[in-house]
Image 1 (cartoon, one colour):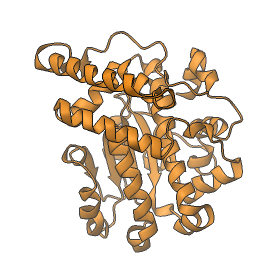
Image 2 (image 1 turned 90 degrees about the vertical axis):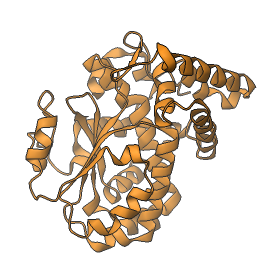
Image 3 (image 1 turned 135 degrees about the vertical axis):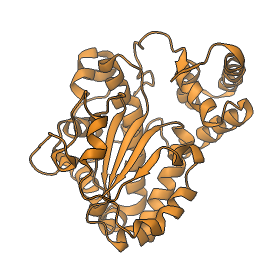
Length: 318
């Protein structure tokens, strides 16, 4: 089965959350209290419900994510953990990566909701790119079905957290679980924004991400945003915490290169159409090297357990 120790062989001891020392002073006391609460909760759970909790209490940086998301309020962070457990059980997130879809079905999802991972920024944060203007809600909602599209979205979050972020951290030598999301609005139309089916998927996915993957977003850049985007920005902001809102920037220029290039100097992995140098044949959301590797694991051509015990494969993925 898919184990949860995907940070297998972590790099050194986690002592600071960015610049904040988390073992000293009031943060150290709150971390100790929070750890005690979570350990007690783990003792109450049955074997089938322990997997993610065991991971949480043995990885300090994961505990700090919940505390940071609630401004180090221990009780609020503990309530978030309980809510996370409920959602993980409801959507079967612990085992969702074991539900291997046929390749044709996975490709259909990737074509209908084009998103892909493409290396990392200079801070070591996984780069995730979404092409909103190319969304095909008819295929996503009616041919695949809303539940299936939602599950693909959730599985993508899991693979980013379990596999891709640890892989990049191993290569860079710096533990980083957050992502840099680029949301490309080129060719987006009014229907992309007003489609109720699309809003349902987005709303659910956003709700699950904020509960189950707190502090997941390092930075988000909305590029080539049309004027109509302002119409729904208030709706989107309403789904996000103020802390998350502060990490999002919106740019309407047709050429986003000046905005994006400075963030990818050490690791020039930006695609050509965004001012970078990466030029792959065909759509990157299918043909990028990283997505081809991800696809082999998602569809069962390779087994996830291979990369948890073999360090060399982390370099291949990252």
